[in-house]
Image (cartoon, rainbow, N blue to C red; front, side, top):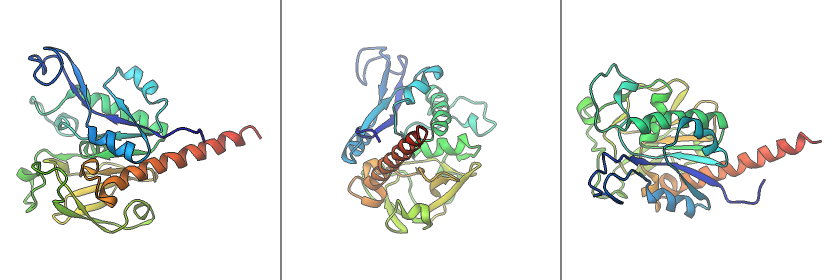
Length: 262
């Protein structure tokens, strides 16, 4: 295995020149920007990895963008456009079509590369839609949940519990079958996508964490572990798990490479 720290890619927001026409956010008027959550940067560094920011690029560039990565995180953000999972013809301002298209292509290449992946919030929803599943466009309009899943006044606050199905896969990640998590989402998985497995739900039945069948190095969660670094199991522990999986993956590939020369 190479003597380097694990390189972890992070997806992020894209602010177009039209969206930043006044230059209010950052930079100059009409200057397009890429924006990333610093919580992810801190969590990866704290776990011993190197954060690599992944701006939206041309589809032909994605393979090269992934070439030197050992793991990847699909971060939270805008709603996914409902046209990808419903017969939806209207405009949908909360979505970013450029980010949707880019991240669908990024998922495809990341899965082919067979590196460890952590999907967070929007990321979990994106994985589900990519696999043919659907979402509740608005959780509180579509369900009768008694839990407020949109709590933004204190992003580190534990809002509700998640019940984890304990098996060989989840025991490697979570130390307990009940987790305390924050909650910053108004959408959620409705119909589960093909090849996915539910491994955790909140008490109101909302899917909070899923896995990909046949892969023990992919995890998707609905909460934001990067904002809960003090919580070992539901917070920083997920980043340490991801980096450890990447190290094992590199070691395994190194052994296979050496065998090819024997």
